[in-house]
Length: 227
Ligand code: SAH
Image 1 (cartoon, rainbow, N blue to C red):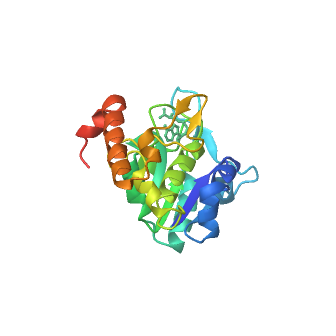
Image 2 (cartoon, helix red, strand yellow):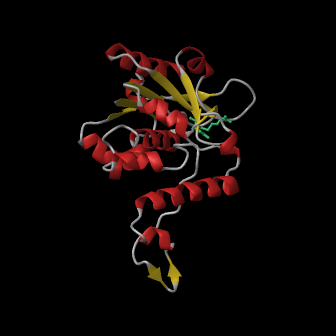
């Protein structure tokens, strides 16, 4: 999979995408992530990417020309399955959407900033708009990092134990069961006996029961959702 990200602040993405599982996925060649500074697509001396919004409201808006040039340049090099804009009014980011995106070949993500981007970009160039939650960030970079993280870990071969993503929360419409590690007793607090029994069948049964119980208690709505 290849992911291109257009941003005014590539520095904000370098660290989240440069460590741990995502870094290993890139080293293994399972994903290629490229950051494209929007200023590279400007032609004035000051490398202007923003301008005042039309209308009475204060605030700067990312200009259409550099964004258009960035997207068109990248599109001329390859075909994109999705051109995503991160936006608080987009469709909610979910595990289901992460699964869908993890099967794509080329994905382009555009991060907004300030008051947002010139709406014509959204009308004519974007294929999908994604929100990471009902709150407003200063820029789309952290949202892009979250989207990329949730997607990349689902690409086959990225996680060392391939099955581990399958038992994560939301993957099967349930929250994950609790997990424990050694020591089996700490401060008088014990790990459930069943987990020490060595009986994998019974353990799996217990895990499913726990997952259902926790979902009923913490996120009952998940049980009604269509999958
Ligand atoms: N004026 C806009 C918010 C702009 S915030 C509004 O009220 O809808 C600046 C940028 O941060 C946005 O362009 C978007 O790319 C990003 N952003 C902010 N909140 C986000 C969220 N919840 N999900 C995804 N991207 C978000």
